[in-house]
Length: 220
Image (cartoon, rainbow, N blue to C red; front, top):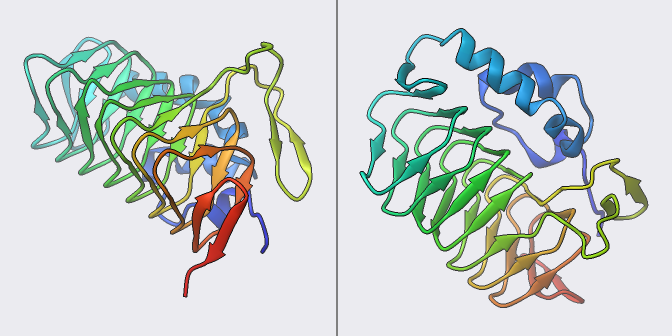
C-alpha cells in the first residue's frame, strides 16, 4: 500500500483563504511554516462574510461561541462553526466552516478544514485536519518529540521537516478513534480509520482501517 504525504493526495477541499499557501507547497508541514503570516494577512484585511469578534479574531456567519470558550488572537473561524464549553483556541488557528470544537479541546497553530469535528478532550497543535476529519474523545496530536529534535515523517522514505514542532496530518474524511495518540509527524491518508487506543506513528495509506500500528487492512 502506497503511503502518500503530498497535499494533493491528502486534501481535495482546501478553504479558498488558504489556497495561496497550499499552492506553493508540496507537503503539509511546509504549509505550516506560512500559516502565521497568512492568518495575520487575513485578520488585517477581513474578507467578505467575516466580522471582527474581537481584535485579531474573525468569525463567519452563524458561528456559535459558548461563554465558557476561550479564544486567543489571532484566529479565523468559519461560518456555522460551534465552540462548545471549555474550547480553547491558543492563537494562530484557522478553522473552516461547519466545524465542532468541543469540551476541553485545545487548538494551537493549526488548520481545521470544513466540517472537522474535535468534540471531546482533544489537543491539536501544529497540525492540519482535512475536510470531514474527526477525532474521537481524548485523541491527541502530539507535536513535540521527547528529545526535542526536529520531526521526521517516516513514510516510504524519510522526510526531514525542519520543524521542532509538528503534530498530526489527517487527510479528508479520516477518523481517529477515542484515546488515540498521533505521535509527532503522523500522517493518516484520506478516508482511513484508526481503532481506539492506538499509538499512531509514521504514514498510513488512504482508505484503510488501522487496527493497530502494525496491523492495517484495506477497506473493501
